[in-house]
Length: 146
Image 1 (cartoon, rainbow, N blue to C red):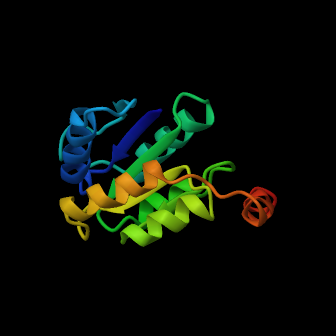
Image 2 (image 1 turned 45 degrees about the vertical axis):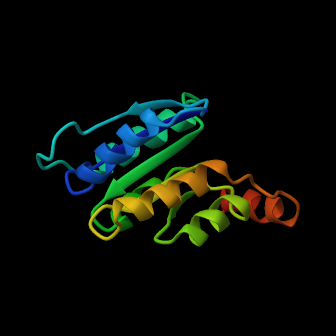
């Protein structure tokens, strides 16, 4: 499984911690790529959200993780791309439903409002949960037609 991460300056500290933690996880077949930024210098979140979304849509990764201060700007930007289902998850249960019911392919976190310990739990659930399909497929298929 290939995971790509990106953030803005406000999300940079949490993204950096998550990237290191994911790379250090033993026993998981994951390839992790950080699309930037690589410092806390001010950047514009739409640029990094767009970069990650294009990466996913080009088939270069399976899932993406975006982080900005609240998660709102990244999720709004990412969801403008047809084929991207970005879910801002503040709690582990939201990550479960994002994958299980909505087949989300991008997890969005608020770096200014989500502690690292909780972000780890959210990421673990998001990356391990499978899409349930069934009646949910009918609904997710409609997302790209509206």
